[in-house]
Amino acid sequence: MGKPLTFQPGPGQRASESPLVAPAPPAPPRGLRAPAKVIRSSLRYSIKDALAWAIMQGAGTGYVAPFVILGGSGLFQIAAISGLPSLATGFLQWTAANVTDKLGSRNRIIIVSSFLQALTWFVFAAAIFLPYSTGYWVMLVTFIAFTAFGAFPQPAWQSLMGDLVPTHRRGRYFGLRGGLAGGVQMAAFLIAGWWLTWCDGNDRFALLGLSGRNFGFLVLFILVAFARLQSVYYLTRIHEPEYHRQPSDRFSLLEFIRRAPRAHFGRFVIYCMLIHLAYGLNGPYLGWYLLDQLKFSTGQFAVILTMGMLANVLSQPLWGRLCDRIGSKQVLVIGGNAIIFLPLALMMCSEFWHFLLAMLYDGISGAAFAIAVGNYFYDVVTPPKRARCVAFNTLFLAVGGLIGTFAGATIAVLAPTPLTLGHITIDHPFALLLISSMIVRLLAGLLMLSTFDEFRLRRPHFGNNR
Picture 1: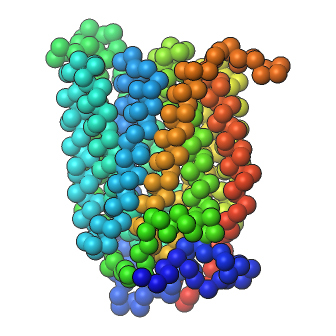
Picture 2: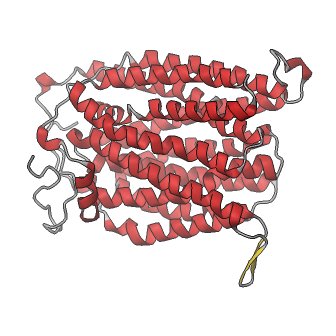
Picture 3: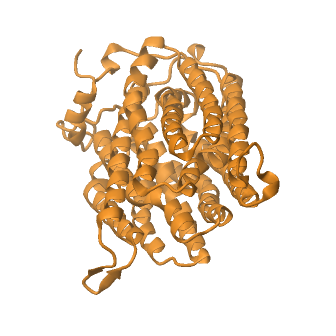
């Protein structure tokens, strides 16, 4: 099997640098491309799929961890339900790329996996009726399956969307798609939060042998199952261009690991893994801090996180256009440096309104980072290698997130508080997690951001490469 990860160096690049990618090949002859009308229709259905999926994410996925937290779980139980599903799906995606290559049909993988993911919500609903000690383990196993069914088709989905979306409009399209989906997710999350607050302690909702709060969760989980089934319908309407693959496009995980330090894409993945590790140190425990430690209501919790979603939604299209104009790497530098200071902003929060301002900052900086990461991936990875690179990238991110999540739980449980560092006194474990997260974010930016280059703006343009 040749050397699929190397190519002739471009201007200013040393021959030893093997970037795992090459400039995009010329577009196929027009006779082999789908009609523009079919492409436009598919992209519209993809947006509709995103909107239905966003309802599931906002009203369902966003409240799995709060359900566990409100049930009285400890930090390691929270860490398990936050970190283990991602690790399992990281290894699952390792095989997903091979399945995509063998089947040659990306739509089949996407549709079947999404349908199975919809069915897991009925298991979540059934687990509410179990004693908590048993229900937690059912929720954990089901959440692993849910995340796996959502992640398994990601290599195929990113490969498919990379073929459908015109290169010069990727930033604008994904910014628009992400903004619309984010708006729906934000609304669903906010409504669900106030619905749970309304149900909590209300005797009128104490039905089917459940407390008012658990009945509220039951309604949410059933509704989002149908939202996901609706998104599956839209997925069936998306056209799949012919999937071109060559034996030379295949490469193993060991080859990827060996060459990653010398490759632009490999160093990009390492940077993203470190950022996920940093997020794992504090992200999964924000809900615990707000709901369990500060005793905020689910409605207040929803409003705080919705502020971040709102800022994210409103700024995504702007960051997407900026990616098209100045390049994904430059926007990634802006976003990557900005997210370093989010833990510092959270450390200054003590009141409800303080958290709203911190989440406003988080939404804007996080949108820049997320849009730039997604677009840079499409810029730097050639179409035949996308499915496999998505799988390996996901595995690295999952490992980073898992390490950060369990490290965060360990620090919070074992570190003595109050803790004095010089003239600073840390009086709560969550503050220590924020400091740890900020240090890792800072080191990731200093060590890795300058090690990979912009590709789209220096890439040659081929006649009809649209």
